[in-house]
Length: 322
Image (cartoon, rainbow, N blue to C red):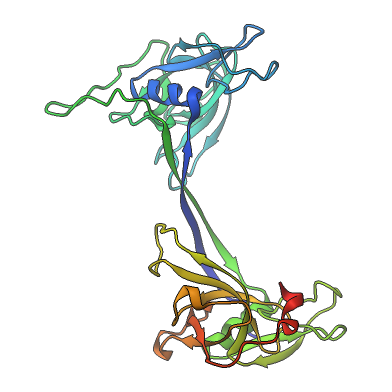
């Protein structure tokens, strides 16, 4: 048996959200070097501000300013910072109750060492030199009981915009190492040889592509390897019209569920080689492989699927795969 394949993977996208009336004020104030909070119906001051009162469910009547200084309530040391975290050297994640607030906010504390961190420590905001209306306008907190300076624009630079901040974009990244199962490893090695390999359940006889190692219906191992052809049928599909970062095909194009002949579960892939309006349920398609010198142990060896020109498959042949 081949040893399992491993590969580093990264999932990433930029998350953009509309801030709404409360968080818009909060982020706009951060860009100005101020921190706003909301007073609840019971009198407690929440920093960051709530969008709806946790008791009455009403939006805050007004936002009030709290101090950029506060007290560490609890903390956890991060000895090896990860990419994208607030600081590139060891720091503490801490719950900080700002002066004038009754609740705590989570942020980074640059204390210098874990030995210097303690519960009850007085800290102050260290403001970013360039602020855009984001929680990272507070670069971190640092020891100190007096407010720190709020950097202004450098000589020759325009002052920060006073326009309300209404949108916020945050990059989201997840990096991890994926270890393929024995069944997936065999499937990926097959792709590296230009073959599609499924596995058959010994009980219900369903063929799974990619193989799963066990039948999800019967719960038994699917050890029998089944070579499959490169042709299949479009069951359902979506026309992609919206561009996004990293897109390698110019929209509009079609992402489809394709039932490979002899398989009992469809796979998702691109359908190219025709106009998107020509793609339909039942369309017969065939795999278009990249040049062999570009093959690896990856499903990207198949560049896309294209119409074969055959008559459409009868609806009954794929109806239960919709």
